[in-house]
Image (cartoon, rainbow, N blue to C red):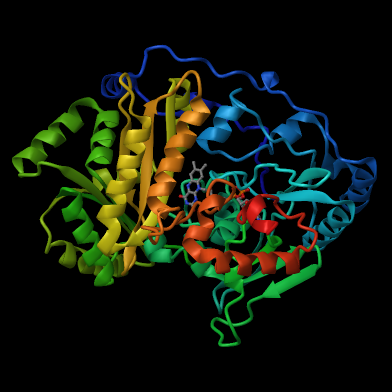
Length: 557
Ligand SMILES: Cc1cc2nc3c(=O)[nH]c(=O)nc-3n(C[C@H](O)[C@H](O)[C@H](O)COP(=O)(O)OP(=O)(O)OC[C@H]3O[C@@H](n4cnc5c(N)ncnc54)[C@H](O)[C@@H]3O)c2cc1C
């Protein structure tokens, strides 16, 4: 049995909220100077001010669900329902802070095992109840928004009780985990067998195995361990028409790989109840280092070279000039001033920070792999800053959501978005998204900070991850971001222009509700129809995750 997360925690990342964040006074001073942020901000409204309507779950449906999972596992109280109302995007957090309207589920249902999940789905289909699969609830694209669609009610299907390590095959290096196991618990359970998954997204502390699979998640060490879909050997999927089991060999030519139809299906095709994962021995040697290159173009070329010569470090993360500047400004103090001076003296005019990390089973393996990376990196002009900077990144790798709480408290609109494209178009895509965000958010009083980094690199291209900071609009804090996000999505997808997309609408955050309008621009109308027919086969009455992945309009055509 693993420790349950408190889902009543929605307005912040940790119970202590902003108090948990390292946002020193000099960082706020810097933000005020740089963005025009006012000294005072509007305090967040307490949970009690949020309007939560009565549950519309019919009595017959409640009774049917209670007969399957037990009375105590059908929750109708306000806090439980509010606690599964939406994910953890900026917009979700603002809604939980009293701005805009929240879609609150009519009940929370907690099945105990994969068979119960199938039964719950059958019962919901019979009663015309929508079902939102809920893992860690960390979606940032509206994936767990409790939309009702055309159903009489909607329930959040919380997978927290599916929290077991089912089996370990040490010979094949495969572990089977239930879908509700959270990142840290999965690693703890596997560590007892000397094994690791190696999947560490920034949401690691709260997100689950089922959520990782349902969203095609990518962790910070994706260059070494692969994206989550690379690790999935097999799955159990509960659907309203029965269970579907996939994956019986490491590779197969028995038709298309249907596992990939389930990985990334975002709860719209079924509920993933178990995942068989490729695991590796726990690394005993870890080494993280910082380097600096002069300018984004030079940094990008170096990372491309590492990827194409197949010597990427397990963690490879390149910040652009703006992100490097913000990191230095936020860390502040004499050390960052000294560092800037040192870099200037070494001829670096536009510092771009590159973090490299190697994780290996022995010091010898780490040394060989590091030497291979550095041989290629040595062909580019770099300044080595050594282990302290790499260790500092490691130490702060989960700080982002904590700092976000503090920034929200300070009146900042803070959000991220991500995409990916091929190397030959990476700069064009970055420039287009940057320009769209800056244009949408700049006002006579406010100057947005738009930062970008590459955190996932491939032989043919890379991801781009943008972080935006701008003083929050007091009148329309949600609309302010939604307009900027729409402009960025239009720049990526080039929707309505007749041009092919510049990049993908999501490299790892998934589609949810927010990206659904851009899906057809990426996969084509035919692609949407293919997904629609899969949906109709597995979920004929359309109860699963209304409005996600395919969006409501795309489904009904
Ligand atoms: C601060 C922060 C940092 C983040 N960093 C990263 C990152 O580094 N990399 C990354 O990839 N993502 C990141 N994310 C996004 C998010 O954490 C991932 O999408 C994650 O995989 C979601 O897992 P979850 O268990 O929280 O799923 P949820 O948020 O609960 O659900 C996500 C989607 O999957 C569906 N779903 C969940 N469980 C199941 C299941 N068992 N079966 C079927 N469908 C299911 C839901 O209905 C929903 O559509 C971040 C989010 C936050 C808030």
